[in-house]
Image 1 (tube, rainbow, N blue to C red):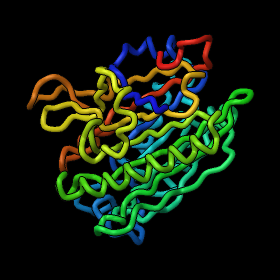
Image 2 (image 1 turned 180 degrees about the horizontal axis):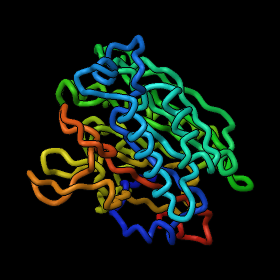
Image 3 (image 1 turned 90 degrees about the vertical axis):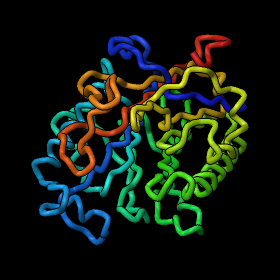
Amino acid sequence: MILFLFAGTARAQEDYETTRGDLRLMWYNTENLFHPTDDSAAGDDEFIPGGVRGWSYKRYRQKLTAVARVIVAAGGWEPPDVVGLCEVECALVLEELVAHPILLPYGYSYLHREGPDHRGMDVACLFRGERLNPVSHQYITPPKGEGFDQTREMLHLKGAWGRRDTLELFLVHFISRYRGSGITANYRRRQSARLAVLMDSVESSAPGNLVVAVGDFNEVWGSYSLEPLDSVRASVGPDHGASYKYRGAWSGIDLFLVTGKSEAYGISRAVLKLPSILVPDLTFGGVKPYRTYEGFRYSGGYSDHLPVLLDISRSRGPGSAGR
């Protein structure tokens, strides 16, 4: 049985400390975390010194500090054990992020490889080795065809934690709507179908493991593109957490999917809505994520997405899963 968990309703910051599980996962779309050096990917030309966005080493260092602060703030009394990231350009960015003075004391390591994305944007993972021991990992290349296969790979990490717990984690960043939602919808559907097969395969081969997929799906649950994951539909609740705002409308496109031995664990989730990563929405009202760029105008913020959190607790008894 598959249990689908949206990224949850925002809770007050103090609740993150009291509701923390035995293992905390964080997902964060970092919005164009480019290193200022020019590389062979043409897609980074906007984010080099002298480029049209005015990207610089100073702005890059400010961005690293911002991401590091969010990671620490997402932990409550202790930073998250595993952090999935997307829109990361290269390994050098991750090397400098884990070595940042804010994160260095927590001993993060990282997983990354250069993928085929046309902009040089990749999915990556930070993990604290004392909390999660990677057993294996692999990258899953995008489906071929339709002219969209130069997009992000999926990352599958198998990790041991606790005394005898195993986590099968999939990190995904489905193709964006940069050419229009309808144009890329079929390709996102193919990505969804591949993810469903992978999760089912892992669950069948290792039924005692907890299987989690998290990422920026670039779609809300119930959309055409996510229909291949419809086997989870019966477990969808009314609690739709929103991590992204576009033209005044919040949507939950950063999602968690949980399957495997979910009944053995208590699971909770949240969208991290710290005041520092939000600004007033002067056009549509309310608040919105504090972005790094508004179009081509540098605003110096964090990201156009909010982080989402998943806490996993060992079951204290029957009926605790999904708390």
